[in-house]
Length: 83
Picture 1 (cartoon, rainbow, N blue to C red):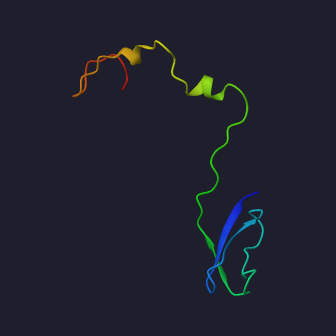
Picture 2 (cartoon, one colour):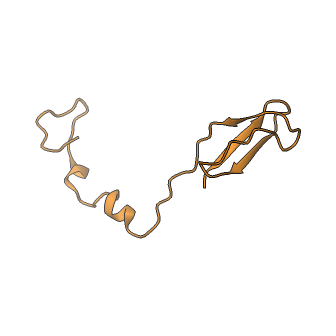
C-alpha cells in the first residue's frame, strides 16, 4: 500500500498516510482541521527478493575480455568490444 505525504497549508504540519491508490485524498489536517495538500514524494526504493538476482543479472564475470580491454582515452573505432 502506498504512503502519501501531506502538508497543511495553514499550520505547516506534515504527516504520512498509508492509503490504497483508489482511496480518496485526505482533505483536512488532523491537527487544525484546515486544508492540506498532497506532496510529491520520492517513494520507496526497489526491493529485490529472492536468491540469485544479482549473480545472474548484474554481477561482472571475472576474467571477461572487457576487463582487460586496452581502450585508449580517445576511443577505439576498430575495437571488437562493444563500449
